[in-house]
Length: 189
Image (cartoon, rainbow, N blue to C red; front, top):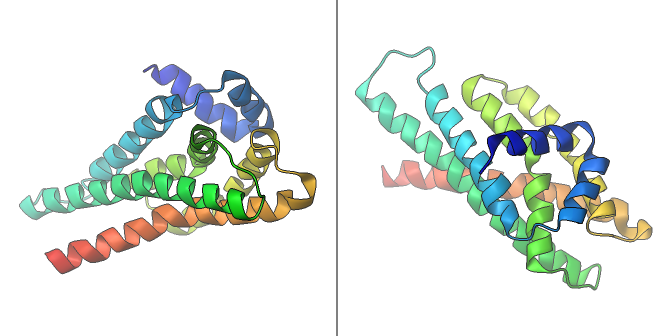
C-alpha cells in the first residue's frame, strides 16, 4: 500500500474527476479498490475522529471511551455504507437501467465516488465543520456524474436521473448506518 498513490488518486478525483475516471477505467482495478483506496481512507477517517475527540478537551477516562465509540461509528458507517450503496446501486441498475454490472465494477464506482465523503470526514474529525461538511458534499454529484458517464457508461437519456439517485444513495447510506450505530450505542449503554 503506497500512500503517495492514495493521495494522488484523491487529488486527481477532486481536481479533475473526468480524467481520473478515464484512468480508473483503463486500470480496471476490481476488488483492489477496497485495499488500495476504500479501507485506507476508512482507517484515516476513524483515526482522525479518534484524535479529534481529544483536541481541546481535558484528558478524562470517559473521553477515551467516547473517542473509541466515535471512531467505531465512523468506520462502521463508512464500511457498511460502502457495501449497502454497492448493493442498492446494483439493484437500481438491474431494475431501472435493465443491465447487470459486475460487482467489482460497482465497487470501483462507489469506492471512488465516496472520495468527498472520505476527505470531509477526515477534516471534520479534527475540526468542526458541520454545516460546511454538508455543503461540500454537493461536489459528490459531479464526481458521480463523471463516473456514471465514463466508467458505468450510463446512456445520456438516463444519466441525470441515475446521477442524482446514485449520489443520494452514496451519501445517505453511511449517514443512515452511522445514525443507527449511534442510536444502538446509546441504547446499549
